[in-house]
Image 1: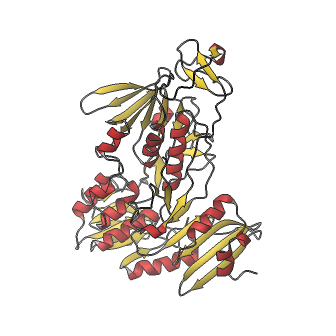
Image 2: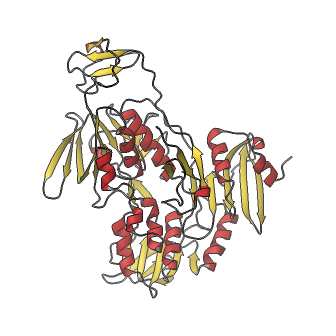
Image 3: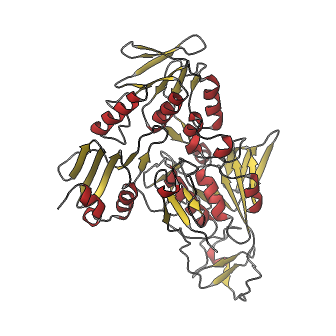
Length: 489
């Protein structure tokens, strides 16, 4: 019996069960922030069965595959066959699916693929820990959750779902022999695959700042990063965060809670320039000030000073900001090295079509490493959906990934924020509805009656309505709550 799916309206986490969880394991909000959502299903209609005359692989569909997924011979080597309908016997051979990466995309793909019959699933992770909620690292910094709370999949989950977890570093992909070379604890190994899903995620982007390699300069992407920061952080620590994006501000809020003196350096006129317009940015900076977080805008970092240990940041205008801890939070870049060296097409990320298939017919991509129709999402909901679809399709399905509008929310800072789509307009073809009062700041941008972008700062109870309308192209005038809020006639 299939369980219900519940989506957290704050962070996008998907929970499976008869009821939503008491609290979201990712962002900590209560169960009332969850709404039931529809599951993704296989889009496949089976009418015929075909057998490969070379290796015996069984294919179900109106036509044979272009090439056999097991031995790679062309379609002319398939013949139609009749198989008795016996639910207790599955004559199709085992399909070996390997997934590189244990983030949300990789683990969602593993869960979906493991549902298939006679399919073996192996996950290779370069982390020494069990798969964990990377999205929750700032809450870990703040002390809201401990390491046990971060765990996404326990050892028993892998045993129950018959998914093999390998701790090792994938080093290369041989697309001719369909093998992965990886380094284990003490030696190198090879692992064959029939289908491969690359879910290698992303790494922090470190600008070419002089002194960025000094001690006490950190980035935040892994549990190890967080532990290294916590080892240095105490009530007397002064922290400088280079970058006023989502991660930088959440880290600022977390370390401020630890009693650190925090300064954020933002090179734009306000924080979160990709998610907020100037009005909302200034409101948020006022809130940060009330939390004893100092924000310096138009702050261009020149260098990090100190002998071998960093002690301050020097700006281009020669301003010196003292620091015991420096956190560089200036964005991420796709982990596309494995794909590039295997001659898989890569631009900003690993290029994938609507089924998330790469330029190689046996290899899929999902999550932060993936570029789909020119877009790199870098957000939890997109990684979850892409992982699920890659798992479905690698195991025989044909489900397309539909582009979504990127939405963003803040954790840790005790302020509710929702941002989706465009936040500023550059011509007169858009209509803007805007409210700025004691309850909060609300802005919706429309084009041809549809939502192109929206901001909610304060009360974000309408976030799910806006998300649904933006993703499904529901006309603004059909959303009674928004029409009422903005008093549109």
